[in-house]
Length: 94
Image (cartoon, rainbow, N blue to C red):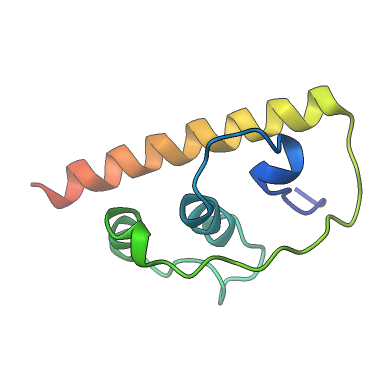
């Protein structure tokens, strides 16, 4: 993916995703290896303790997409994030 990922609040300001969860998703989707979670365990710990996560500062999007494409992208990211969270939580409870 060549375009930057837009935050949930940019796509739909009325969403109810917490800023902490949004920060976790943005970190997981970062283009830079150094900025992403370095292991599944690190991601799972962030999800389990998301109340303690520092919220990423708002950065304006570099480009704009049509509303339908942005909404579809946000839905895909949210679904993927929830799936990852479930997998990692189940993995940690083994």
